[in-house]
Image (cartoon, rainbow, N blue to C red; front, side, top):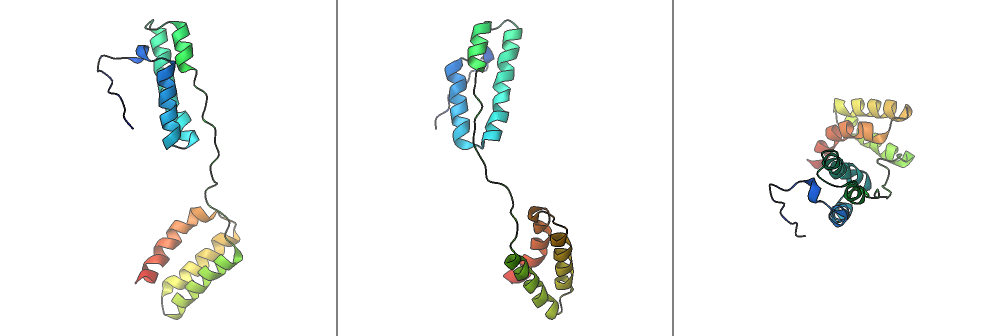
Length: 138
């Protein structure tokens, strides 16, 4: 994609509807809807300040700032572990404990407490995964 260079003396007062729609389209292609909508608030703010400072007419401001929000859905982060997955993790911990690694007992206890308490997988998986994965890779 080719992006035009903006001269240093250029300001938001030169932005028109076609420009802001082009920015919206490029952002919508590359980013999640929530991120696009967050980033579109910046040009809206610049346009509003240009209007307040008298650098652009109210009608030009309204047209250029009239950007519809990007709609879309995103997958939920994390998921519930099945009992088979939890069993597999506990089995791995048992293998470690049987091999004399105290970390196996520790990980099994931590896993049991967190899973039993209903904690979200993403909140604890990183810490357990860091302790368990390196030994498996060796």
